[in-house]
Length: 309
Ligand code: AMP
Ligand code: MG
Image (cartoon, rainbow, N blue to C red; front, side):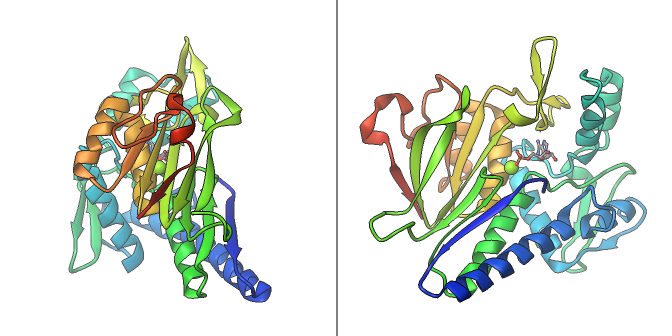
């Protein structure tokens, strides 16, 4: 998942906490080995290699995640698309050239993208693609899933107070950071100055994910080209904004933050109709807060607002 994961767990028994954290890190590694599309030996790569030629059996866990991803694809109107692999590879290949791919190449590659090309047989646990070249890419949801699984491992050890993050951008919090706190304080990086936090939120028994492209984009003719692709055009989504999503599950928050980046602020705010339990906030400089989210400009009253399930 190309990022560093972090675990903070609180309790009295240091040995137990260490064992729990070690197991949780192993769980994250296990998930990486299932879902990494760049690793030819992963479960996902095995599916990608054969599903265009025949129905391919998928292990239960990856199959379930694929169904979740398919549901989010449907409910975001396709903005989150777990078949973005071919376009992601195309754009990655051009990254070193510092230029976009040819429009013809983009148009051709788009023929291989779309969750509607992925067919599933739920009782049989098989998946097949209706054309060659389709590739499932769970990069926008896998980090959240790994965070959720790590939390489940810690909970299995009876740990009630913990924080797990993937790359600091996908976070799940349980309980609180100390006896005097209502939850875990999370600094939100200022998109225009990544050295400083311009707000703090407090999470308790809830997860959040932030998608942005500032770290992974290159400039071409005044336009920032990032790693999140808009399925409607085959081009990268605008790179200026950061989208924060708060949800009960890190899996869902991760997928929806990517979808929100694709959709842009207004359409992303509409997503809360389909996902009423979810909060979505645009962190771009000067952005207005969505209903139910704190206004950065309004000062102290909204600072350190607590989110919980
Ligand atoms: P995230 O950092 O969670 O926003 O996920 C970004 C990763 O998801 C990219 O590196 C791609 O592998 C993949 N991706 C890019 N665009 C999309 C999209 N529209 N829907 C789903 N996955 C995407
Ligand atoms: Mg994501």
